[in-house]
Image 1: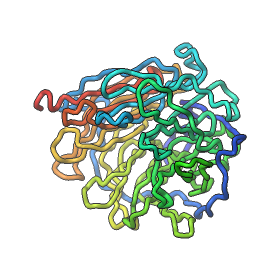
Image 2: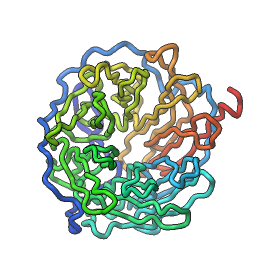
Image 3: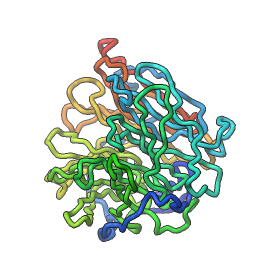
Image 4: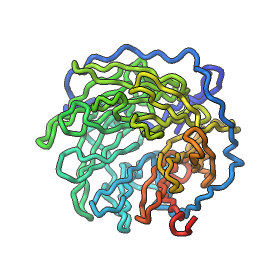
Length: 464
């Protein structure tokens, strides 16, 4: 990642100008077309933040160790560039697998011979398999710098063949790409472009937006001057799934350019309880969290969720944290994590800080959160990871893996360290990888190590 500094609100913060590079492009294959839906009115940032409930600010450098023990196993390290992974049972053997890519970044070229993106699956049954070799996306206009960055990924069956595929954003080439699951080990995964016309794609999510029974893809694009100098080209779009017969994934606008600068969080969920998916997004530069509802006309209407300053907050998640039947958001914010409690179907929200972290010498970034019952006490907990900016890829970073344990109530949380890391930790997920009944953790570190690791939860094994 590279960073620029600027002054915003009362803080001096870093404008995140990359989770890798990127590339401006045209669409020579005409794989994405169609008139966009009418965008909603621009969402203005909140002028002031409402008063929030008091919470103790903790020092992440002096926290107690986790009362649940974890054993780390590195799946793969020393990659050229690793930013994103997905956990899913791709071979239908009832064991979660881990898919990830080693992208090509010029600053780390000594760790990778080929100049493309190479994909891997760590099978739950054992064995690390290469599924894609040095893909360079030749149909896309090549970026000005020598980079090929396949970043955030999701698992979704895009062609309806019963096998779950990998879909990810190619930040360097302004593309969204799927790799089709062949349904057997040892076979290559075929590339399919969903669009070549999403400049600065930074995150994505899946959901049946138009109610036709097929999963569509929502894509968030940031302002990325390094590859696209036009600051107006950014926003939130959805790609309509053409179905098993194939055809173009038609691109439609959700939110236009001025409201969104760095939309890291993007989640598809039913926030108003009408049975249809909505889209939530949080901007890591403007600090505004919002959600969008699709109207019968096909247009979208946007709603600001007050109370959460999402500056530096990267990837949040949609989850019913309090079990009241309404979908909430757990969102990384400036120096902390906030639970955005959905009170009445998206009209009223309560912002409840569940983690507040002391400032350090370098700006800490809560990179991602994952929600699950880590200690098997019947209550949901939150795992999270930390990263810090640095001027060069080879500069020292600050990272780490932590978790928030829910206490006597959903408003009381304790914070624990699992591991402090000298590498920027940029991704986290929870899954029972070994089938023993407790949740294990998967993490992804960026510079310096560029690694994917598994943290085996020893709760059941040790009888904790």
